[in-house]
Image 1 (cartoon, rainbow, N blue to C red):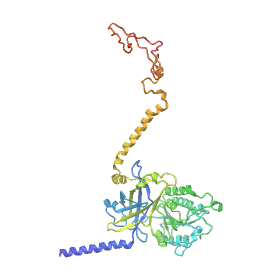
Image 2: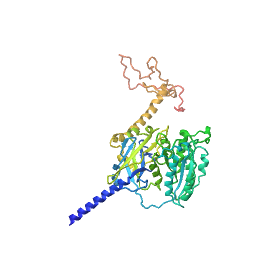
Image 3: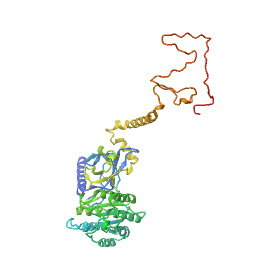
Image 4: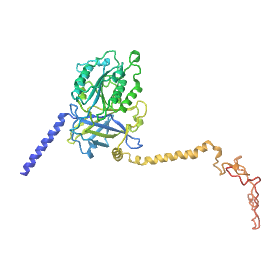
Length: 486
């Protein structure tokens, strides 16, 4: 009887397990990067860079889901990261459990629509890019909470940019929001794209709208091009442009505390992916696919609840900040769940270095991350060097100090140093003593006091008698009060 019961239980567990796996397979769960990769200092005063990655788990509709992750002590071995095509094994991974019943907090959002002339192109399933963007934005309004959330829908091109965004009208009902969406002006062929200035002004407007107790303000940017302004053709004067303009807008995003999701309607050849990456807090979505565009708006709360944080060391080819200067590094990730299901990311994430300067660290590793790095990161093939490196550093510093102390004075003042004889550096302080000089490579003979004469070669001096006296002749003009320093 017991055998029959155990067999039935085993069959039931197998069926449940198969059904469990099939549920995740049918849901098409994938990884979704919650933030851009960040360059992190692995250890205090360390030279080797690390990257912190953070992603959550979403289903086919873009909603966050909980997945069966491996235990914490085995999590790093179930995560794979590719950095510019090179495999990297994380040295630290930690999961934040998601809450199935989470209190919804108010959300303030600004939808920023590009109405430049290129948005009129009809290459999205027969629709224009502008109409496709409006249809996708309607997905967001379906999850709008009347009386709680606030949203403003603002167009931008290249004229009257600052005043238009500053006058954004935030509404609190879905009906009002839909009216604002319907009232968006149509793109015009002569409009250009003030992308940098629009983002700069939008995050400043959202920063002023932020209230305590709310989620981070959110900016959703919809555009299909690059920053393209021509003040000489009627565009606003003072619009941000070039590398300095991009840096100014990117710095404003980072300092504002606004969650920015850039959405590019096009492909990577027509859209400035680097600029979009620097302008967002999340990896940009660049797509010509309507389904992917709609999914970007179906996510009600782009929350970091139920996320996975991973730390990975840069590969040998990027093992210093100098090697990272001017680079665009692409990341891909894969996670193997406890049931063997393999999840990959929806889209790769980019890390973009400043175009000229050596990149600065964007943060420091936590205590737990530092301990994990010191215990496992690249110690398998660099232990001897890590052990000897401090000694080489101290030896190099000691050599530099020795050169400065002993070598530099002899190089600057060679006449004050005589390696063949020992003599005072300042002989003029000794009254009655003539400085020793070399003449014809011979030292001058000095007068020997009486009784201390030496015989010539081959001669023998008489032995002194005990009664002989040694005569000491005082130096003429000797001043006993004079010292070497006077």
